[in-house]
Image (cartoon, rainbow, N blue to C red):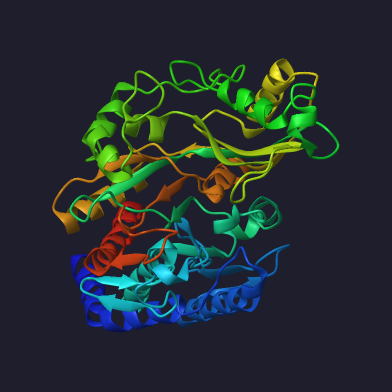
Length: 462
């Protein structure tokens, strides 16, 4: 097996320049999912990946429509008796490049500067997707792959994966696997490999508070009609208590406490409170009392205000009493919390605290459960061993603060665990101008994934 590994690694090293050029090709396709003007580019990116799967020898390759953007499916079956089937996931959509004037080079012309490749999607997540595909290519072009691989690539992750739940339910038989390998992860530094063992869920809301039927003159009606902006501010202020805890009724009823092992894993991460102060530029940190910043981000639920609007917000003054006020609210959830229950908890809070002098509406735009995987699971250990082999240091286990809808969907609908891995870095400027990919780390990632697959193969062969 060592000789087979060596051949695959040698293939990857020999073809690394071509791998980079192909990544540049994919980055050049502006597959922005949130704006309809990029619809043809979304389709081009899906077709590009379907062709790439064909080049790997995949069967049953298909670009399937959804209500929004297409899914790309394919299979690399080796034998009906293969002991392991892995579902490989990635997304090909990207965030908008705005503001364009802050980019040093065009966002959709991938450019190497120093050790980094700059361009929209280089790190999130076209670079991670290509790393996985090129690791697989390095194996199948030099060896027989005695495990079955399936692929699902979506074009909606950056807009919350609205089609994913229905698609998984409809294609359960095609997607059935023992394990999902999600390539949409990252590591905490170029010198410290990382395995993400959980992601938080998400419940996203829009709250609107209404007063009068139209904007009013604040001198003529102020003090007689309740101001929706004031009401909204008071409601938001009451959503946390003095200890930084979320004040919705029952919000913590199903929250798992952090174990001693959890807290030890958090302590290994090179992200103490000083790191967050330096990274954010905030004058002080804030959050639930009794937890470090990294524990609050990875292991505790939150409620955040993502946007506010009311009345006149232009230049100068306008003495208006607004007719309505609006807030965007997101809750990050931990395992065992249910987005539907959180919706009802927020609704109950509003029923208990909103005055009768206004009316309100609450809409939910996203609801994704949290998910986790046991770090002692054999496949996770196979990845840990692969990382240690390449980096010469044991990886750390990390709980992600963000949300990746498909991980929760696969666990909830299919009962399928997911390993989340990737090789992006915290300073890659995800979703921002001058997004980048650190190429030495990316190449290490390809080698790591080759070893991961061989570790799985060796484990199934006994």
